[in-house]
Length: 291
Image (cartoon, rainbow, N blue to C red):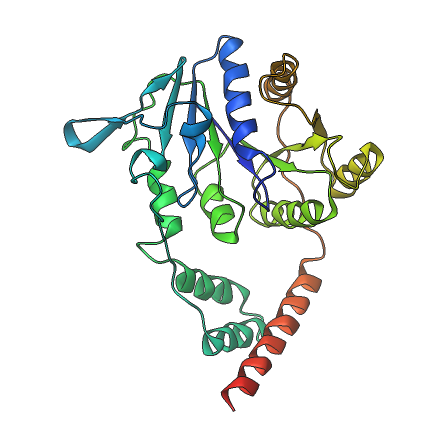
């Protein structure tokens, strides 16, 4: 089963629409497809699929059997929580003393120890990273002979990137709108994927031609700067537009015919120096507030 994650730095760029559109296009090409909605607090894929009350089946040993919608298997956190309820998945909070300890480890070039220390701080056994791992556990969720699992994610955080880096994704797709704030956020998402060596198919720009300030040439320049291919530009269309499905067929063809890339890290030592500087500045600000 090939796992493809749909990622973006900010919300509202159309990750869920692209997740479902890609899944349906792959299904129409004869593949057996599943959708995994990984968003804990805002799981909307069931709404997009017009099946808000869909429930999974439990069998012996607590194995989850995904239900099907129009020939696509689906698992979503929206199947578990009551409609309208707020789900809070918290991780351990980090304070100034923790940051100073990390800075001291970095200063003495104990980079591995610093990374391990920070990971221990943010990994709460009941937190988001833990639950994401559970969603990707194929011994817990029986996807059967599924060919593709298209994974819809929440607006990207470092915890999300760390989790998807540890579940052996076959590839990821980053989504942006043609706007400066969205470009800034997706650039950070790409950098996180680069640092975790997560393979990336490329970039999809959604809602082109809407009320956004950037044009096609800006999109091309952005992708060139990020050293990633532009998979496709999707115009600003209504979902029931007859042309809508054709755009997802193009995206599916790209995924089927191209291998994702793992971006090389650049200037690692310089990034460490910048990180140390920022952590020190943050620590100084906390000291001022304590006084």
